[in-house]
Image 1 (cartoon, helix red, strand yellow):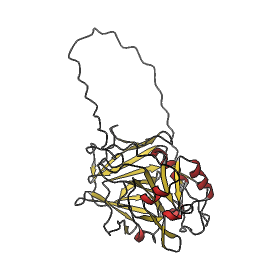
Image 2 (image 1 turned 90 degrees about the vertical axis):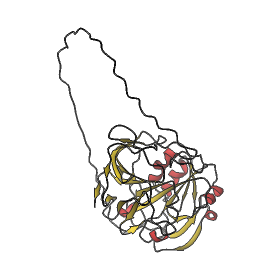
Image 3 (image 1 turned 120 degrees about the vertical axis):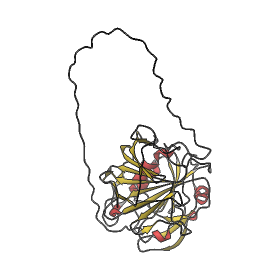
Image 4 (image 1 turned 120 degrees about the horizontal axis):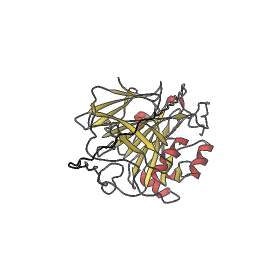
Amino acid sequence: MPARHPSLVAALVLASLALAGCSGSAPHKAAPTRTPTHGPSPTASPTPTLAAPPPGGWLTGQPGPTGPVVAVKIDNAPSARPLQHGLQAAQVVYEELVEGGTTRYMAMYVGPSDTDIGPVRSARDTDVELLGEYGKVLFGFSGANRGVLAHIDAANLVPVPDERYDGAYTMRGRRVEAYNFYTTPRRLIAAAPAKATDLTDVGFRFGPAPAGGTPVTGRLVATFSSYTKNYLSWDAARGGWHVQVGSWLVQGTDGTSVAPANILVQFVPLRAGRYVDVLGNNSPDSATIGSGRAVLLRDGNRYDGTWSRTGLTAPTSWTGADGKPLTLKPGQTWILLVPQTNDLVAG
């Protein structure tokens, strides 16, 4: 990562727990022969099917724009939060852990809009794996370790970093740790050296709320690290969730707090990354291929379940405790990639 993007210094402690189990069976006697009896055959309950989303609705369940998929990395350092633009307008927002215990956003957009997005920051290896299920998307970022950049160039992505396409970005001053670069999907699409693919199925299913939800009263705390905690609370008047990072209530460009219809807390394994920042802090990778616990927050309720993804290009499946899909409410979704050693608790 370029020297003009140093990161905050903080300790990051990674832990993992391996679980093992075994099972067995014992011999049993054969059941005695019985004379068959006849009665009415049970009627099987039909398996509910979920309708395909409307045009452009694979990410939101609502009619929406079509066109290339654009992913942009957005800074979430404390000094960047008052400068953030574009989070409110994204179809999906991911929050991922980076070095020093801080987090960063990956915001997903569809089509050539003029949404102002930033401050744009650097890419990580985590992003290559995360974006694999979206296909050949356009990827906007500012800076990357040379090794990470090589991995991005080799991946099924269309990278448009500001170092190569500075005409697609506008610089609005700088902070101690970074320059403040801003862009729009339209500018990134115009500058892209290749065509990105249109939106496809990445595993979201929309419909009525799942069964068995638990009402959320007060706040829930999602812990990324000792340095970064998200406080989540339901806003019934707006029909969405407040996202507070530390003491900062995440806001849109108009000063109104974001209010995603859904929050998915995806508990993921962490592995030490292959690279460190300029201060020697390891940049961890969040593993989004595999399986683990998940929590859906929608309509003021909590639904516990699991997530699974079988490979780089496979979609992520979200399943409730009853084996049925964790159906999302139409609208924006935030996905928090929380280390699997942590939990979602009242606080």
